[in-house]
Length: 404
Ligand code: SF4
Image 1 (cartoon, rainbow, N blue to C red):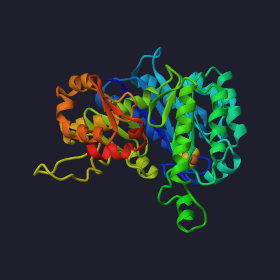
Image 2 (image 1 turned 45 degrees about the horizontal axis):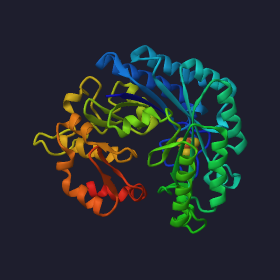
Image 3 (image 1 turned 90 degrees about the vertical axis):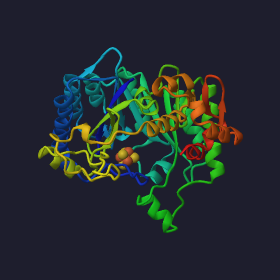
């Protein structure tokens, strides 16, 4: 069982037009108090549970590279102090926006222990970057990768978005191929989601512009990336993720393997000691609660006295916020989630791993569902396990729904 630590930095230089993440460009005056609160939250884990072993750290956001790099340095210092970390093996990722990267910041990250950098580049055509509301240029990205390589970062990811109205297949091919030329060993390709309430969605709803391209073009783009990256030696190891051998993201694998993770910061999710819970999203409330030593955890499931309903536990304090009071996931919930998460990986589920983890035979347990999905051509099954077919990877949501 591996364990990850996620640290959420909710600050951005400017809000992208498609973004509905818990991130803000107008709350920078809160940065100092927010980092102080996160340090306190980190320490609260040490106080409650002692030294916890951590295999990966992921500093995400928001834009972690937007804030002063010494803040990142300081927070990682606490992580190294209060958690058990094997420095020879740990993966420490920082997400960055190419428009906010400098040589000095990269040097600080290196000194702080960061060994993986993820660039949110999304596209390499200025008109697409403008449509998405990205603050960086294509040149910023090339320069960022160059600086990262010069500063000894080998493990680099580039995030790309496809399926955008106005983005042509040639645009997409250019983005994929230029990133391949750079030799970036990990590439994530996501189809654009027009999320409710974002400026992009509001403009689409008002008929001012289009959000997505046609489904047909979206699929052509996905297939192009899949075929091209595979031919270039990348392993397609998860629906949206491709990596050169040895460069799969260890932190994300923790999520898909249903291993444990602790989330620090506003809105961060955790799966720890058999419980799922998440912190309050609101930055001010998160800081206030931590300052008052209240619980930041607001969604721990707790049974009422009849053992049925969930109660609002937003007022629980650290002192009584012991996990014994929260509702553990049932075995059925855990098994189902294990299957759903596992099917995201192209290697799928191994029967032996399921048996080892739950002492149950998944093939027998889900016989009806497996048979249905096989008939629909969404999964393939053999003596080792089951995995999504190419059609299943395309229609992953449909396959997941069958299991629910
Ligand atoms: S940089 Fe990332 S987190 Fe920030 S607004 Fe853009 S997409 Fe959202």
